[in-house]
Length: 285
Image (cartoon, rainbow, N blue to C red):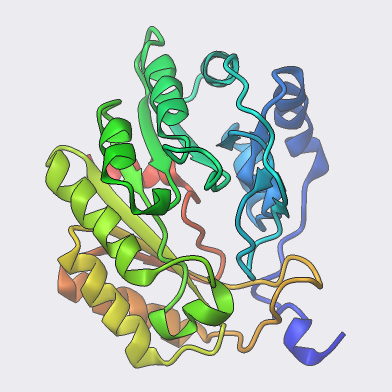
């Protein structure tokens, strides 16, 4: 394994298995997946230890093969109509005040899974204490109908990640489209002004500083309120290698630049799209 694959000392994070066990047990009991586990998130020990998890709905097999992601790729499973209620039950058991729901990309479904998102969000919002809900969706194939259906469930935060700078899409996200992602964010922002709009990207793929700044401009113009920027970490050997470990000074510069644009920019090596989402949702409410 080369130097580019070794984690910088400030990126390493020790897993606390004891803290993780109770949340993992609950997830297995309800038959639920999390992006924390499927994407091998470096923050899962901390989040699970805080009783937080990001639910991954519509199975654990993705229809796309993004080069940065460790989620299994193949033919997705049929939808489980009991899943929305199981997500709500698990949220109740964990007493979540802010529930984050994401999914594998379902290009095999006519609506990209929008109706399943709608049912899941409304099931969670039917809980007696009505937690806030954040959705993190795919680009839905650019379907305005699918997006509008999810918006009809009234999520408090709508999140869609651009993931990287546009010049690297052919290498990192070959089946995605940068302009389509901006369209999704812009449409979500215009559909309901009460919804907070969020996006995120990773650095360390070989992008230039000015490219990241241009993305921040684009996201602001698309109506985003919050942007997360984190260091890409290679989850498996089948994924693209790390090109660069970005300095702390660069992360600080990203954060300051985004804030000058009027964004709540969360930039740090271990920042991920749903990391401490409950905390930032409260700050932005």
